[in-house]
Image (spheres, rainbow, N blue to C red):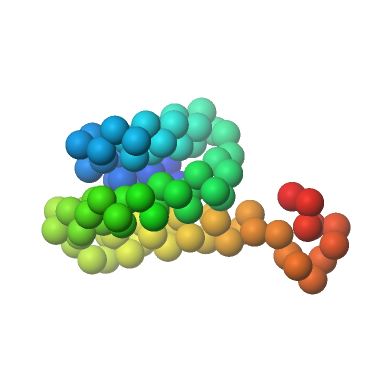
Length: 93
């Protein structure tokens, strides 16, 4: 699973929640166009999907394994973008 697939999973269940749907659509569009998405957008998308019960719906539809893969892919990207506090050269990223 890649970042585009992961965001598409959230997008499929986000329609009843306008704010979440708008953010998720923008994330998906950016990944489809080959652009990087800021970690703050990914964190917000995951948090809101959890609050709105979207992750539970995804687990019911696709199973635990698929949703765990999706969350792992997004979490790795969030971590990849996180500045390394031990490396001052990276702290401004």
